Image (tube, rainbow, N blue to C red; front, side):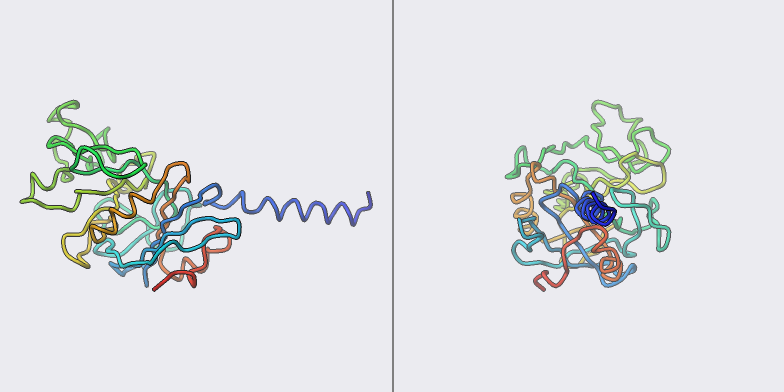
Length: 251
């Protein structure tokens, strides 16, 4: 084989291997949230399906609420980014990047979703205390003990602890900080909003019917991922990360 043929074969091999290196390789469902800037507490959500011809938008996009102070780089499947705000516990920012989905959760015993589902109890808490060995985990105080959840501000049955609060009636875990590193941010969810446009403490919130439809659409076999980025960062990283073109988003 001539040197030129060898080089061409090597180039073709590298080109075909490039998609394997993207953070979304293997995913066939994407939840994409973009915001105007790092400091904007709102964004736009569009879901995508991977087809033989690439990513295609599924249904209409819709508005969501983000952290009260915007977003910041989180810890997920994406390469570490050193330029831009970095997510910290209590900063009021939603984690930016690419993340796997954890379990769905809610107040009902069962919901219409193929995702693994965990019904929340009066004694369910997500630990947002950095010094706790249970940091960034949803636990049952009846099993781990009342002392183990002392100091947590994240009761998961908000309706029973906060005058009928519906925010956690349906939702799912966004797997930010999967190694549970202290102070790097905890208890990041997609959940319902109480009022349209109301900012969150660092989650992504939406209208109830949108969440119901989203949970019904998601399927674990499609290896769904959650993407959240400011628009400028999205465009900067879109090709190297294998993300859909925003022009396909229905606004």
